[in-house]
Amino acid sequence: MKNQQTLLFILNDAPYGSERSFNGLRLAINLGEQSEAETDIKIFLMSDAVSCALLAQTPGEGYNVQQMLEILLAQGAEVKLCKTCCNARGLSSLPLIEGAEIGTLDDLSYWTLLADKVVSF
Figure 1 (cartoon, one colour):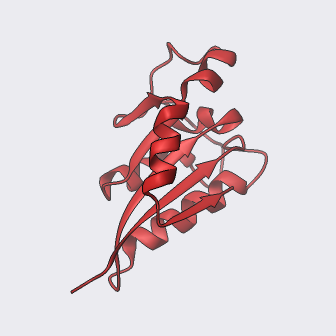
Figure 2 (cartoon, rainbow, N blue to C red; figure 1 turned 90 degrees about the vertical axis):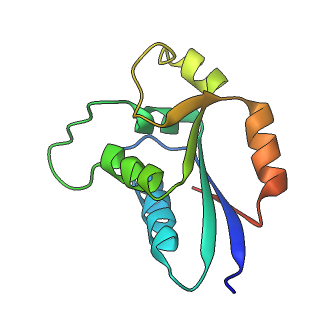
């Protein structure tokens, strides 16, 4: 029997310019692909990372954070964006990747309490 772990990833940096969000998503995807353990992956986007979940990203070359989040959602991960952070950046009414949703500090608190491990990027 496989042991299930709940993993919470908290991302804070913008999708491009820094590779912190990219690296957090890379790790989350890789953990979701591991056959040795079942994982319940949750991604909470805060600060400038909320723009990671915006629809219709077209980066010139290199990685595509939108596609990475779509992979995680297809793997069964949950993705939420900080409502306060979205409001502060004027992003609350913009279209999001299908499956991503606006969340609250209460959601993050609950996910933190449920998590076996919390990883912050």
